[in-house]
Image 1: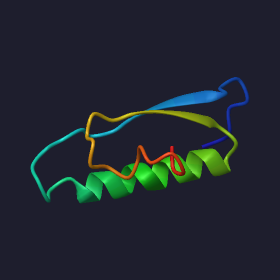
Image 2: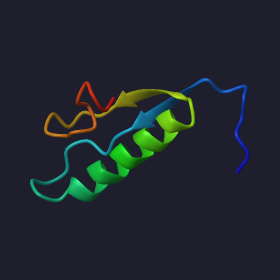
Image 3: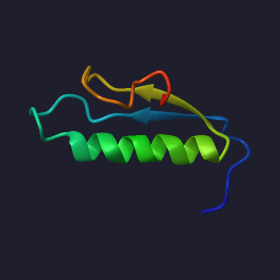
Length: 61
């Protein structure tokens, strides 16, 4: 997919809380998406209502 220069920010919505021990694969996917988008030069706005996620870590988000 070609890079779109008209888009500067991307809203990334996390999976939120599901069941204890079941959301780690969604969290990992979100972290990888966040990293890839940042490497492409986009500013990522992250929304995730799961307080136990690493996606919302200040170093990651």
